[in-house]
Image (tube, rainbow, N blue to C red; front, side, top):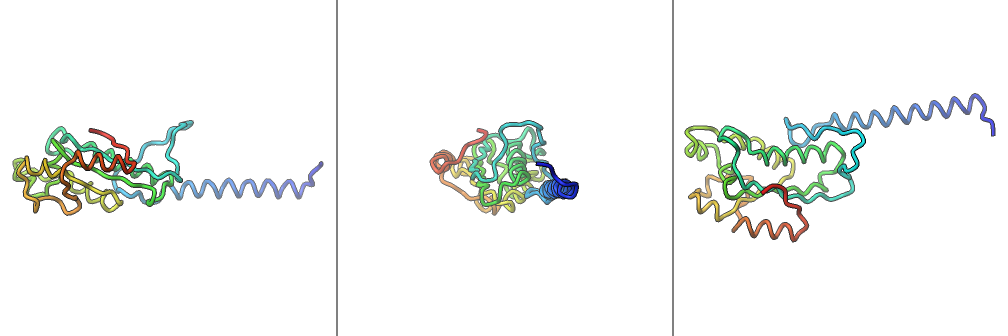
Length: 187
């Protein structure tokens, strides 16, 4: 079957329009605002086989069991959670498919403190975790803190940031969330 010049030109024009349209949607997707401002998503890896799937519901529990290296550093697990949320968003996983949670306990517990309480425990140093916790909460991440750690560290519940839910015990929270299908990261 032989195509006329006109039919061939029409096919080529259509193919170019589809290609341009697809590249425009990719640019729009990667240039839109990410849920957690100021945190870069994972970099693209050409030829990567395992990548997030927009049709999958991601249920992930980030376990903040250790503090940052110094009181002036943001906890690295919070940074990982923010990067993960932004990576899922970047590749098109809708917000309703991003079920992300964070549990604070043991050495990670002080990150939950309001600024004045953190300063009182850290020689006047402001809590560097507040901004990322607020940004993650605005992106739909839920936060939990171990009540046993709060009691053990003699933290007044009024000194816990409002985004963070006080639970009985981290062990209970972790088990309950894993039974609901959450995958635990960190710890």
